[in-house]
Amino acid sequence: MNELSIRPTPITWHLPEPASTTPMALNARETHFWFTDLDQPVQDEMADFLLTLLDEQEQARALRFRRPELTQRFVMAHGRLRQVLGRYLGIAPAQVRFCYGDRGKPALEAPLASALQRSSDQPLAQIRPLQFNLSHSDRYALIAVSHSPIGVDLEVVKSFPSASSLAQRFFSAKEFEVLQLLHDTEAATEAATEADTEADTEAAPEPETAGCSLARSVAFLRHWVCKEAYVKATGEGLVDQLPQVVVDFSAGARFEALPRSQGESQGEWQLLELTPSWETVAALVLPEGVPCHCRYWQC
Image (cartoon, rainbow, N blue to C red; front, side, top):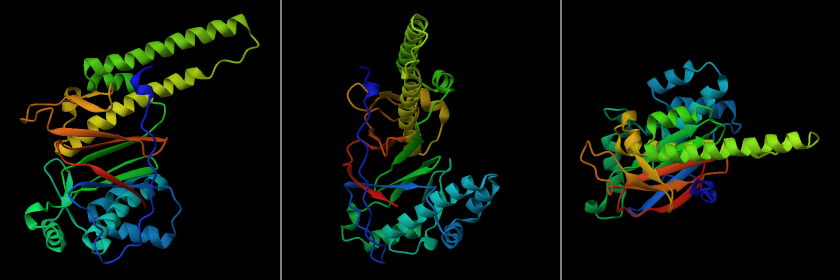
């Protein structure tokens, strides 16, 4: 059996306590995940409120979408992010402000990070600024919060016709070979199905053909989210690095190789594969050696 045919068990999500002015606890050993359905019905007042939480650039971007559901998803994702971060900071979501790295990675403005340090019970030397990352795909969003640099990526599972062409461009030779093996399996299944159908014209085609196609798409997406989470964690966002980010699933998801152009070694980052739901695949990347005790919340 191909190792990519086995996915992690879907996460059980928990409802958090109501928000309060007391900051939500997050110790240095924990990573918190927040998962939300961006298509969940919301009252007009809430939709308007979430829009007001966004900065001017985000509001302008949201209103450029031509389809109302895309506007709602964008506003929900970025509004929920501020609500979540406000819980940890003990402030109103409207007070959450971001600064951006050279390649667009958001971070909390310095005064907010300093306020978090002052409010913590841990010794100052042990405190690092709050780190976060957001990913959204179709109707779902995933937020990761930690005290370490992190990157998270989420994709909705669906048929992906361009998987092979993208893999040829952005995957290593070994990773592309794995996808090609699934393609060959699919072709063999199709041939067997056609032969069975010709032998018995009354027999209905077997359903595995669509399943193989979806399996190949899932395999592609599982590689893809790991690569994307890495470039988001480093903050470099360089797509030309993706072929050098080599993921191995033979014994659980891990990095087999990473880019070395900036002095990284493949031991400096660890990878965690996630299944937020059977409809989605996701991955988290954080520094090697950092404990990753995960807690899962729904918002």
